Amino acid sequence: MKIRAYQDHDEQAVIALWRDCGLTRPWNDPGRDIARKLTEQAELFLVGVHADALIATAMVGFDGHRGWINYLAVAPAFQGKSFGRQMVQEAERLLIARGCPKLNLQVRSSNTKAIAFYRKLGYAQDEVVCFGRRLIADDEPIISG
Image (cartoon, rainbow, N blue to C red; front, side):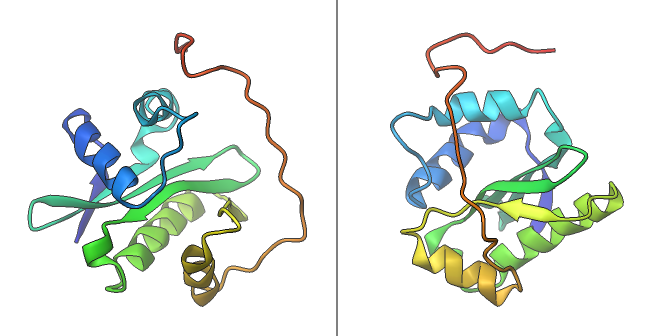
């Protein structure tokens, strides 16, 4: 698998992959999530390509304090073949190069397969409670720098 930065022509394949992996939710427009990411650290939006097919994604970020991975996805037909591990390792490499001391990620508590995957990679569940609040609805315009 070749890992590279997201390119504009990847959008439909990325959205299809996220849907196939069950990552999309009715209240989050995946196209808007992509557009938002492209305004901040676009080079950290990674895709994995195998035999000319987009099979993996990782939306990585660093806020100066912690690194994050969102939308880690591997096409169902390619899961269990180390492609997810490769995406995480590349995210970690890029974050370490930026001086990132710790990587955080969020997994839905019902996603037991993802929880087992991250534990296998050495990640541990932090004793924290995650809070969220919608600041901009997906039907509002995207504000760019």
